[in-house]
Length: 557
Image 1 (tube, helix red, strand yellow):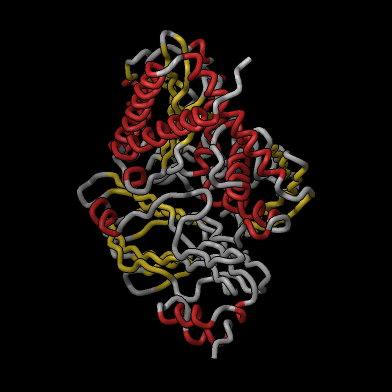
Image 2: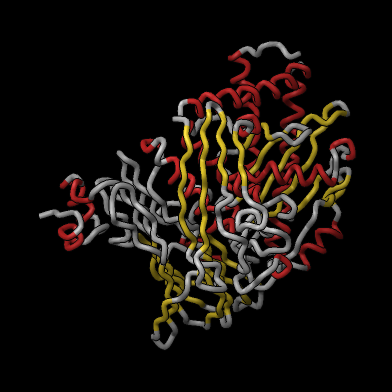
């Protein structure tokens, strides 16, 4: 029986573990090779107990990665129980079935940490690698129907055995990737992060009583559970429902229903997605671990953003998704674009449901998609390249606050790739980058504006994949009939012809072709005629809304 924790020591211990997780993630960012990680921070890190319970996570990581991390660790421990591991081991995997990372580009590395011959912790990292093979550069294609077409599948396997890197395995993985240098560099960064974790954990045990450190690892989880339960108890009991739709799955025009029934009872929170649509042919399916990640994120954001991010906080949460549905698809369904599209809609419906319970704690719909772009091929020097990025959009308004313009929202939390980095690294030229006027969701508090970026291709026969949404089902507002502007993407050929492209497609660009991508805005809140006149005129002066829109929508004279 553990003694009651000292609250001061508990806070010190909790923050020491969190600090380690932050340092691990920082090491990964600073030592990675691809701009997607070193510039955009498309990665995450965590420390767990030997049984797989998450103890601490880096806040700079993507919420989606962090929420899926428990499933990653469970999949590793199922194949390699902790008593079968030895010091210096590291297990690599990217396999989403039966549970694991959300899609194949997310490669995870899990390694045990030993102290005085006993396993005391696990270090885990996930990085979105630029390419892991498959149908198209970037390994997130459309026009596919099963995961085998999406890239290399890596079941849990030792990448490092007793401190010795398994070079043959790395070569096997490299052989299946187009951008081999980036893949190796980013894998080495994950290995460096794991070794940093081992050093810091051992230092902590050296500096304190071993039993005390182990006891407080349990106390941290129990404390997080108490905090979460207290926060849920502050929400009104009841059942709250909401539904929204994805435009399509890229293979047909049928919308995809995402629906939730939230039940709050005392200190328990249940999210039931059973009424969501069946799994689809295209790569928009996901696994239940992703639904859990979405729910963890939303509940934490609504209850208390400062809650400790660990397994204890998840204990009061129950997530249900019907097997065979788009949110809990059967193997070998294609899932490559669920991370960037389907999961964002899951967040939207959860917030829509909670809008009925605690409207002052949620926002209107954000852009609702990550707007993925993958551009790859052979550069003029004869080398493979792949540019991958998720583009920002508008944030939904709160009841007392405008939504931010041109920002990554909800599950992504990544940065933008600067124009200079794009043009220096890839055969691409950026001719436009900025906010889109009149793309906001009008309201007393307006939504944020979307972003436009225009790229000119400087190489021949360059493959491009776009994964976007919110053209048919626009970002919704609250207490208003207005919506934000949706997604648009144009192909402007070198001969001047202009074509509106689907939201989800794969095609080839010729040298001189331009790709213009316009992301959705965020929904507004309340009647736009009630907006403060000075704020309307400020937006006009800043070029965010036009004078005519100010007169027609905001009723500004």
